Length: 115
Length: 115
Image (cartoon, rainbow over all chains, first blue to last red; front, side, top):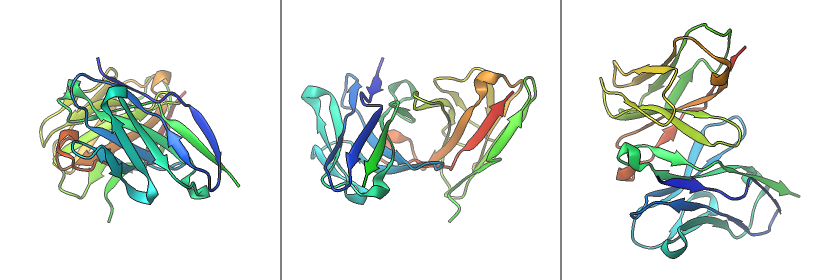
């Protein structure tokens, strides 16, 4: 069975510092990978996605993620965090038991930004 | 731009009561989804639909029913609410499934408490 793991439940960084959020997946074939962000009390917004090609993908709000097949990872990065980045971040994969029509989500990482 | 609209946003039910959550999208999307979000568990797929008149079970379908009588609407029903169904419910929609690369858009959520 495929799954998505986000090892870090909660991360705190200082404003201006760099950020890396981890995501690991277990899936036999090349997965379709996504990162979403959820601000408090809001729905989810797509940050970026990977399907094929260049393993470094750029997203909105200055985020990027790198697909590493050898490590089964799709980590999200940002060089300089802003206070407005405080939110919960979800990694997701196209769920094979739905023919990859729907998404399966990790449990999320809550990001706190210190001034 | 309404996007994906969920009603109601908040509801308190007594155990055994029934209710229906309505999701409406104005983007002419074929695919619609219902997820529930619980602390530490990310979002879990309840049911989804790949077009008008179709529905399919997701990861956690027990205790829920759905209908997609009109393309723009996806209804989630709880026939006999249980405290375990206390959660935040998210509806989402997309033109095609996750496999296609189309963005999946989320509503702002419906907070349901069963007492």
